[in-house]
Length: 265
Image 1: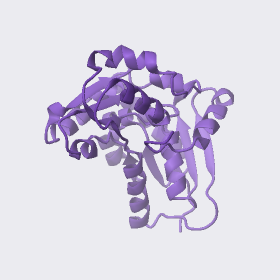
Image 2 (image 1 turned 120 degrees about the horizontal axis):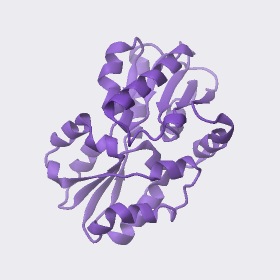
Image 3 (image 1 turned 135 degrees about the vertical axis):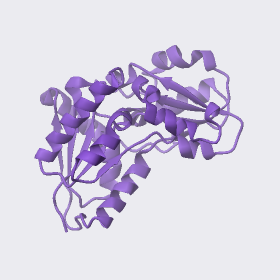
């Protein structure tokens, strides 16, 4: 049994959505969450900048004694995962956009991949898309503005329509079989995304995200490496490179948000 904490890292608060899922699956584990809010968002940065910032954040968590590291940021995964797995002595688990399960659903509609600009342009994601049965079925949208709005504590269902319109208005009326929430921040506004697509698109508009698969993989890695903690009630510690006094209430609010299941009112 290993009671050391698991480190979860994101450029900001998006990874709290993954932490929320991890606590449900692994309630006896201890977690340290680190948000690099001072340097957020990563989505508009270069690959070199993202790699350097991710390495710094990983080093911070290692100094706190984590037994495993979860990169809860699709953009950071794309820029750094291969390097971190070679460099670090602890298991590294990462989230990736769930375009594979989205592309497996039958239909002749498109798969709308909503992410940051960096995620959609980096080579790792492009290679993932090319491995899909029909890469052209996936439409990529590197969206700016959503992350900052969520970081301010805004998650209302109608608070993002102006941003969605700026990127998606030319595609209104198309058939959307699937929508991939390719940024962990976007999971907090899943209801807003569903509402918008149901209003302006046809098709099933089914939502996909990579959190559940990532958390299950974390559980498998802990078991295989004999790193699990099986007693007590797990604790959560919060750290940020930004203003902790300002951001801690946002962290608490997001951590306590109910997990949205598609189709709920």
